[in-house]
Length: 172
Image (cartoon, rainbow, N blue to C red):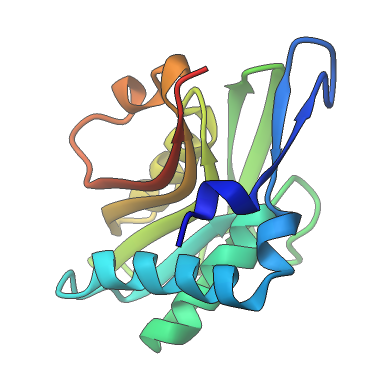
C-alpha cells in the first residue's frame, strides 16, 4: 500500500512556509492505519522491546497501537503540566519554535529496552529530547520509528547511532 497517498499535505500551516503533513487522513482509513502499525511492528521484531514511548500527541496515536500489537507497555511523553507524578523534563527546538517534554521519573526501569514511535522526523529535536529523557532514566533506546521523514531537514544527522526506520519520506 502507498501510505504517502493517504497523507494530506497542507501548505502554510501552522504558519507560512511550513508544509504540514496531516496523518488524520491516514488514521481514519482502517486499512492504512493497520498497515502503518504492522510495518513498524515488523521492524521492531527481534529487538526485545520492553516499552514503546510516544511523544504528545501524534506519537500517542501510533505508539499506543504499536505497543498493543507487540504486547508491551506504552509510555506517554507529554507537554509540561500534563503528568500528575514527579517528572523529568527536557527543552528543545522545533523547526518553527521551542517546546518542552516531560516523562514520569518512574516510567521506565533501568536497563529496559525502549522504542520511540512518532509520526514525524523533521529536525530531530523532538525525538532527541525523548531519547535524552529515556536514557536519563537508565533505559536503552533501541529503535526510533516514524511514519514520515522530512529528509531535506536532515534530522537523522541529529540522532546518529540509533536504529531509525521511517515509512514515508519527503525530499522537500
